[in-house]
Amino acid sequence: MFKKILLLSVFIMALLFSAKSQWSLFGTSGKTNATVPSIGIGNFAVAPTSRLHVNNFLCAQPIGSLNGFLFKTDGNETVDNRWQLFTGTSSTAQTERFRIRTLANGFDTYLERTQVGSEADM
Picture (cartoon, rainbow, N blue to C red):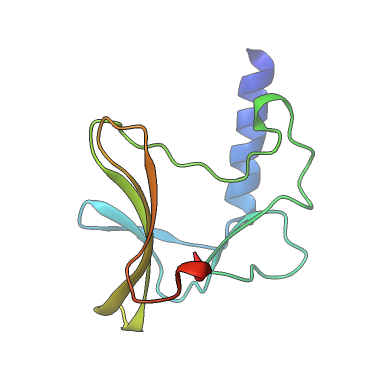
């Protein structure tokens, strides 16, 4: 148990000292400072190359149950859960392009394109 607490403490300290973002309250949600171009999680030799970049290469080797897991989200099974990709000309003029979803209390996963395109592209 002590090792787990120590490992978690080291991880949190590393994250606090290497985070490239500033968080603020926006209503009841959090948001980043508008001048922050990206958020990097991990050890970076160069700046993150996407808005949210998880880099495992320069981090210490993960141990136990973390080995091989880079990203995870947890969703309540009693509600529909989905990830979506939008593109557009501004944050208020968006078109949904793709989604991954599961229905409440179900076991199926759906990969859906929401725009006309080739089935071969899926």
